[in-house]
Image (cartoon, rainbow, N blue to C red; front, side, top):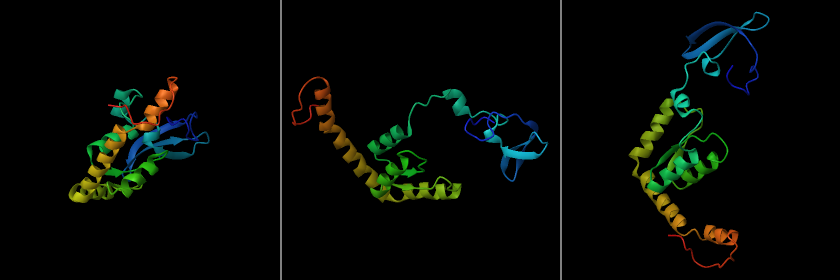
Length: 166
């Protein structure tokens, strides 16, 4: 068991076989009482290593927020599958702006394929993404609050004036 938070983590089991059953890679083991059970192979060290994980060695050159920011700034419509934290809120903003489609995390490949086709084929998504990109660009260029906070943090006084950002 390679998942530390899984209830079976840290326990030893007798390995029986690794095979594909009903379209899923499974690992069959015997517990302390000799009972046969199976787990998804991805939860064990019997599955081949994910090449991305091996190459990244735990590092990732971007975050989901960073990727969304880039997509927003260049005006690309999005298909979003939020998993947690602030992702559902960000997805709701994109959908509300008309710049993308939100899917459930258990969406099938056919649903995902249809959503991608829809944002590509329907020009309203790209137009809305362009509007969103323009607004985000304007906010970045006129970020007075950050300028004021930086000025105060540096020992100055808030001026309430316009931004000095380039």
